[in-house]
Image (cartoon, rainbow, N blue to C red; front, side):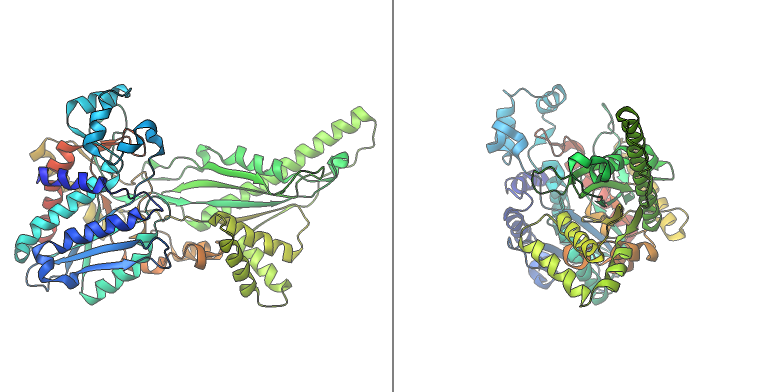
Length: 545
């Protein structure tokens, strides 16, 4: 199947399916056409299912196909899923016109100033270059070609394969999120028992010279905690009479940004620490009044920590930041009074930290009308204005803070889009321990036959659609997320209860390559097209035979 997978990968790469473009629809059309051309699906056209994304101006859609093994009454099912969008190609610079043509790109790269490692890989002939070749159209091609060949003897397959190809993975994961209710419906309609979901998103070296083929048994989670800071404005000529939200935002950044104290670990694997993504005061224009409000938000990876625990940690951190800024302002004022001869009086005053749920309940007491309708109007106005989703959540918090008439220095803590749940297979759970044992046996046998070094890891380190197939957050954490996420139902309505009900063990096998999201992105063909298909087939037969 090597040449067949390689040819299909080139074809899929040639379709520019950059995120947030109509190319995501074009590649869905191509995949649907490929599936419908398989004789099995010609005989069972109803088993190729498409799902349009809701109110999507680019008419993007999910494409699914259910290959029923045996006599059609088998229950055991393995899901093979992947995303079909890519990041853009601006990083290719002068080579941008060739980013989607694997053969032409290899040709022009011969005269390019490539990094030494990329030069060696190009000259080896073992790598296929191009945007999306590794992330993850090569993985999609592997699934499609495998399905085509397995469908030729479907009656000998003692289980079912559910293929799923989704758009919008590189940003908001809308494809898989909107597919969850449909997955649940198909599960009930066809009486499916999901044994495993295999993603084929890229795997890559962990360090220079690393050739280990990693199998990931879960997915890292991602939160976007946001802090809205209410200070006190003043004239610059009376600067000590104000309270600086900017300094508070800066202090939050100093405490949180890249701080290993915020890393979350599970069973020896740790997340990267949080990273600041945006910090700004909200003063719209210049004058000599100091800023009144500010906001800052962070990327926050999660392995095992519950959202309730994280919210408590974030609120404690906000209290520390407020206190530090207050103490520093007071000390500076004391020093100023000493050098200027003014009489000193303490600037220390009461501050407060609340989460969005607490802000909502206060606003409920203050609002004379329908608070939820008011929030909807604020949300709709922000969406209509084309605001970034995070800004829309911020607008809601601002509006409710104004309703409450908050004047005390305050930090409101809340979550904004996107939210990626964390999950992994845990040995404390008997069923999940059994899956881990199965994967260890499959990987060990494959390693002995193929000569590849296989290693199981718990958390796929990049954000992935696999996050939404199994959720480790408890019910209190799910409630915390919804209650502390302004505009949740309109901005990011993840059907978390559906995901928890599906509870599909989500693993990542992955094509192997280098430099994904870089102009030198490339896939290693000997493993990805030659050995990986066999690894997947052995997994299928292990569960079905």
